[in-house]
Amino acid sequence: MINEPIKPFYFDLTEEEIDLFKNECGKILSSGKLILGENTLAFEKAFAEYVGTKHAIAVNTGSSGLEIILRLKKIENTTVLVPTNTNFATVAAILRAGGKVKYLDMDEKTFAPSLQMVIDAVKENSIPPISGVLWVHIGGVISPEFPAVIEYCHKNGLFVLEDTAHAHGSQINGIQAGNLGDGASFSFFPTKIMTTFEGGMITLNDDEEDYIARSLRNQGKRGMDFGGLHTDFGNSSRMTEVHAVLGLIQLTKLSKMIAKRQRCYDIITKHLQEANINFVSTEHMDSASQYKLIVLLPKDKNVEEIKKSLFNEKVLLGGEVYQIPCHLQPVFKNINGGQENLPIAEYWCPRHICPPLTSGMTDEEADITGKMLVKYLTAS
Image 1 (spheres, helix red, strand yellow):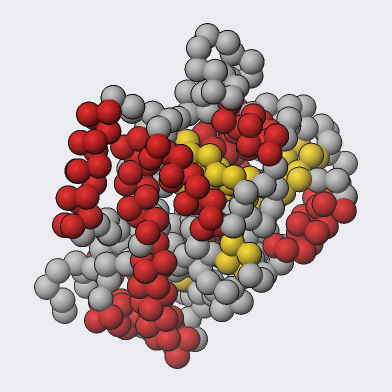
Image 2 (image 1 turned 90 degrees about the vertical axis):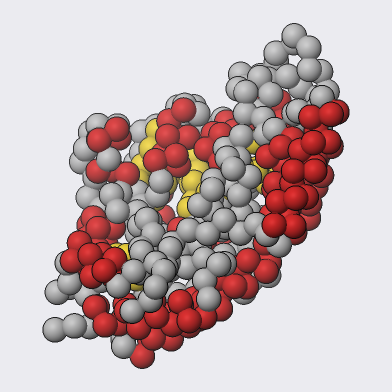
């Protein structure tokens, strides 16, 4: 038994970094430049360099970023493929950008669709026609089939956009998440790998799309014209200078935070492997954000009983990814007539758990977490 609970969330900021943040915020207030200033530009430049893209555009939320990159693709009166196992924001962004949704099921080995699922969906007659895919790297896991998905889609004239809300620092085949497809949106929500309180970042490689994306985040004002001329149907999606300062501080330590998560992931999964407990692996990747460790429940286990048992041992589980697939969410219930047949998501979404995994965990806490998972997932 441990004295303090092992929590699924940790805000990774030292006292020195807090002092630095306060000092920089003081400079912002003194300058009077609260938005679209030097901190935002510096954060964008540093993030683009980290991901490896030509451009990065800071926005107020990852959700706003998703809508903007979809608007860049002019998806009105087209269908966009999207995994049903994702957050509300992914599907909502498609609808807000004027598109129609066609759901994809998932493979339990990756919690993402398979290549064959994409091929089958493209071959079906969709009305309106399919324009592209909005892919999600659930838990920071890049499916080993994702490069093949991109190749297939491009050969068929379809775009591939990335929802990288979980995937800061994830990499496969030498390429970072956010630089694999035709555009991406990251989230800096407080629970994410790095945070700016609220916030998001678009990553792009196309100069014209960068120009329009900056307009769409600023009420449709193009270039440096911040007056009264509105050219595009944009929104107020700017990141503040204060948020950008925190983002710069967090970005400088992102690799260290991911390394801490990876070490704890290795400790926990060693226990799971020895006990033959299934989980979503990242072994095929160059690096993984380790935002979530997705553990699949054995058939004879009840998720609520497992949660209660672990809670009593002071091992606090994080939120699932996701417990209820989007096609079963009340808000989306009737967008496609409610006729979807997505059995894998319907089975595994409510039958997985996500143990604590943070950059603030100690090796001892990771070891205890692994042992407690084995204890209750293998108990007869």
